[in-house]
Amino acid sequence: MRVTKEGLRNQVGEKLVLIQQELDELALQLSLGKAEARDKFEELKVEFRNKVTALKLQLHQSGETIRPEVIRTLEEFELQLALGKAETKDRFHEQKIKILQSLNTLEQAGIEWMKTFDSKFFTHETEKFKLKLEILRLRFDLKAFEMKDAYRGTMPALRRELERIHHRLQQRINSGSSRYDDFTDELSLAYKHLKKAVTDLV
Image 1: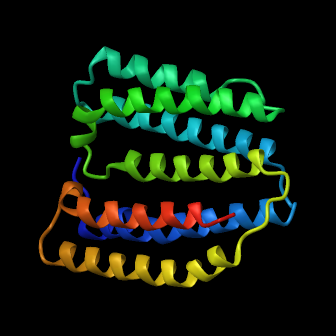
Image 2 (image 1 turned 90 degrees about the vertical axis):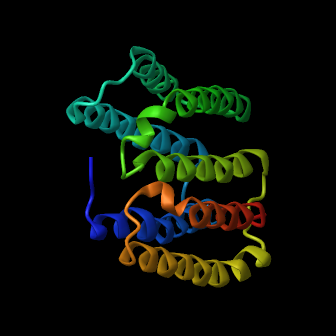
């Protein structure tokens, strides 16, 4: 499945800025008490399960030969995301471990088919999912969840850095790069910055 240069720009660069905004919004809602961690965890599972379902449909419609074990792994991951509501910290941690183990298995099983999709939809979505899970873990583990000044101070710098990475990605796309794998270094750097911001959160 080929995508246009404009499609690559949207998928590769702009999503990074949107992910940062989503993480910031989630942290703010939790710190202000405008959202409960258990409710946000349920929303996150439903949202990601819908994306996995959409991915299965995309794989089916692509005409690519997908190994049966990959489909089974996708379905197992969907089941993990459908586990009951985590009302307590222990239940959250239990579900989080199972979900991440299943996701890791899925990522390993999907190495082949992920290379067949230039959009590499799953890379962005899984990284965002893991970062949101980490924010929720912090909220479940801490009675008082207040964003540190260090985190607030990091946000403007992080936003500028993501915009610089986005600009570099656009230049590479305009100069002829057309496969997602061409941008691995930039994306790794971007997610490293996002993970660092989350660790500075509390």
